[in-house]
Length: 157
Ligand SMILES: [Zn+2]
Ligand SMILES: [Zn+2]
Image (cartoon, rainbow, N blue to C red; front, side, top):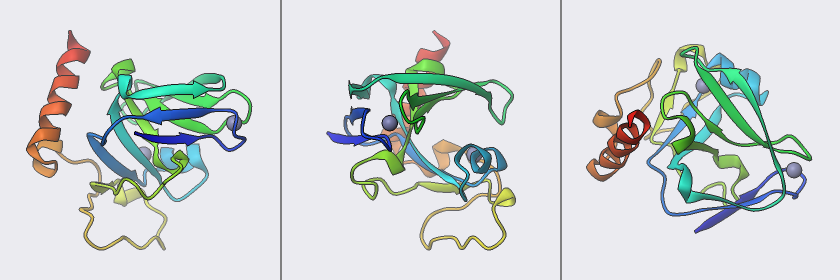
């Protein structure tokens, strides 16, 4: 179990276990949404993420694929805590790793959308990097591929 929260301290959440995968995304949309170089998202089955205290608000923006991207925020300070993306809908949550109390807990499996990164951003050694996206089955260990396939199957059920 790990815990995290927003910028003002009103929201606290708990997340159970290890993520299915962790992306460090450098795409233009993530830059706009965060005002920073990139975002680090850890993807979980939504039932592993539990709100402990505080109130949430949501807003919807368009994802890179054109579908609805729901950003879940602290209602008081507006900091983004996690997102639901069109591919998995509400059953999957992309947690903003920077909101964890121990933000170093999860290391990215991949750096993605390097084609859109700020030109001076240096890439870390030892993390696979991709110009756009990647095939999760080629990057993740088998047990996490299985978890991802189970979530995709649930999203289609
Ligand atoms: Zn807050
Ligand atoms: Zn992105």
